[in-house]
Image (cartoon, helix red, strand yellow):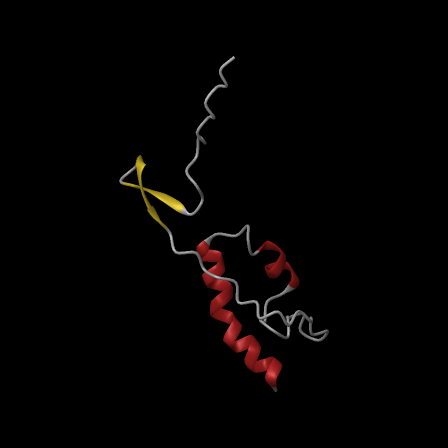
Amino acid sequence: MERPLPRLPERPHPRLIAVDDDPFETVAVQAIESPCVLVCSIDAATGWCLGCGRTRDEIARWTAIDSDARRAVMAVLPQRMAVLEQ
């Protein structure tokens, strides 16, 4: 008995986007890397990670949020880290 061919996914990979609404012509999307530096300790006063400046919620949702949301988080991290360094 011959095995059936595997089905192709109905949606493109999340890191690929369609070009000109053509689902077969795709380009790779640059993923925004995590700011994690493996110093995972939450400051009790601010609720921010001492290593990267993110909140617990931001850390937990990082892999699920889109690039715009990641950029928004990344934009506030320098200010947070400056506060933590005082």
